[in-house]
Length: 96
Length: 136
View 1: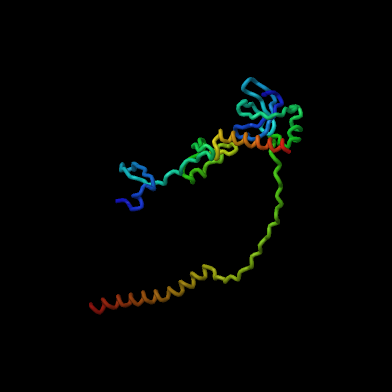
View 2: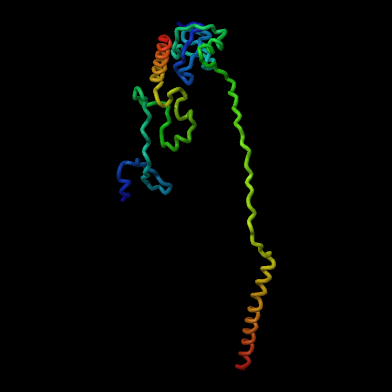
């Protein structure tokens, strides 16, 4: 019988075949949920997923897209925000 | 709208949000841009054209007057940090006990042990020798 804390589904179960040809269950942490676009809510592609400890070992360019708002907004949302900002700045400059 | 000298903002890639000017029109889709971005070919879809058209020959001046940076491939000069003079710590001399050299110690031990052992051995030998004679 496994320990009580392992009976809940908090940890994910990984079936592993040992060198002695026995099947064992290993209990591992679940992946954190994928990052979403702050505007559209879609899952962001191009952002590294996995254990935070493993992600921290990656280089910055491997973690998130190297564009402004990379890892925060989707590319389409980023384009829209940049356009919006430019229009706003032009409007303020014309008023002055 | 797409013509040489048109001021634009790049809206895709790592140069997104930076200002640039069209330097050359390659075909319907592609143009060459220069300015705050790197000098490169670019799809027209990735540009947000503005109302202004500037003189491309004096691009650096035009950008400076508008308050935009001009991209330069040269690395920035590293600022020299003032270095502090290192403080040399002087350790106070510790009063250490003088130890006797090893050779002298070993000799002293042997002297102590040897006489006692030898005396004991002699006593046992004498006893062994004396015992069988009495029996005979």
